[in-house]
Length: 127
Image 1 (cartoon, rainbow, N blue to C red):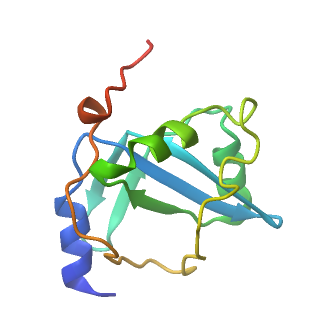
Image 2 (image 1 turned 90 degrees about the horizontal axis):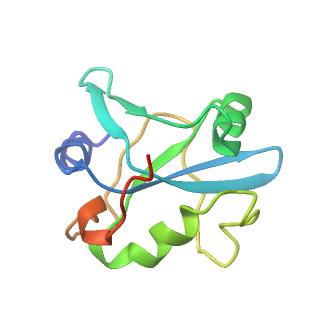
C-alpha cells in the first residue's frame, strides 16, 4: 500500500460527503454517505455507517468488499444523485464512469482538491 496516499486520504476525512460503492452478483451500486471516519492506523480501517435496510449494506455483506470515495467540492450534483434511495433511483451509477477497485485494502489519490462537506453541499439531516 502507498503509505503517503493512505495518510493523505485519512487526513482529509472531513465531516463531509463520500460515495460508497460495491459490486455483487454482477451489479454495481453506489450511495452517498456522510458518516465515515478513521478507526485505526495499522491495519488501516475506516467505519462507515449504513442503514440496516440499505441495498448497499446487503451487497457489501454478499461481496465482502466495498470502496469509499471522497467527493470533491465540485461534485455536489453527484452526491445528490447517489443520495437518493434505491427505490427512487434503482440504477444510480448508470452513466457514471467507474472502475473496479482492488479486492484488497488499498488507497489512492486520483484528483487533488477541496473535499465536499455537508455544509458546502447545502444538505441537512432530516432527523
